[in-house]
Image 1 (cartoon, rainbow, N blue to C red):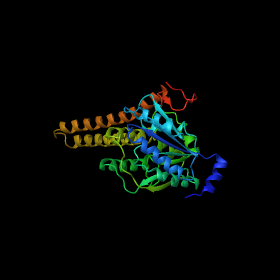
Image 2: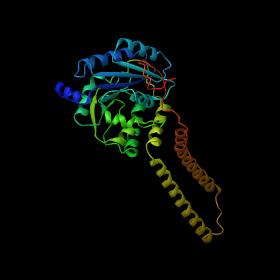
Image 3: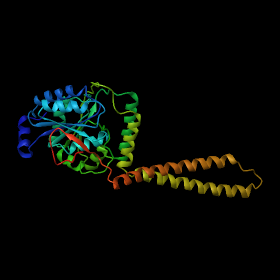
Image 4: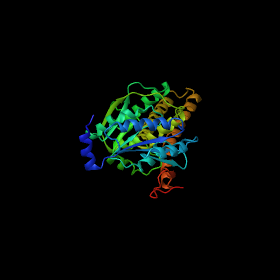
Length: 330
């Protein structure tokens, strides 16, 4: 842990303020406990009176926004925002990053599976030289399919994003202001936060935390949303898939060329041998299947380019609890 003297020195130099940013979706019943625990934790730390909490409602279908408004009148350190429609967790975070004021920014989920008590130790890693501090779970509380999916995602991130070995890309993390400024300069409509972070820095630390049980409701990431996020990582942060399909296409073309030579030689040596239609049909299906796969991969990239050129919004605020005319609202 860092001392109060160290914090005071950084505060005088950089006007230290900790920003805690949380995207909110369908969690009206858990927000009061969440804010109360953050309040208690921060007031009992060296950051007392020098932090802010920003809750970004991702157009929840419940009364989460009304609860945020109520809590904002009770806690002066809290600012709330709601988006015009559901943009997704990573886009909601990008919206919140344009509201933060802190030298250090902590990102966490709204379900209390991320313990606020771990925040001071995460910031300590930043003060001691890291640009980003991720968390890793000592006792993960997710369903089995999510754990398996996370391991697959971890493998893909190591390959596509050059993720450091052993690093778990948790949604509970802390970032220095310089990293935040670089991340929020991304204007594309399909933000993938961890990919942006790994493009910016490799000075990454990690701390172990206890993974809590969800305090209210059920998790919002179902299988289809997880697949969508995975595709965002794959096609939004790397061109490796394009290189892969190019190599696969070359490999299939080479097989076809060798097959043509084999058929020509076989026809010359065994002119009376009957030819099988089954092998022809299988070959057609195989090649057409690969072609469809390649077109699909290209389509993902072209679709994202199309939406970017047509200025598909990354997010749009509808209301803020504090009147900031700098940000357009609808």
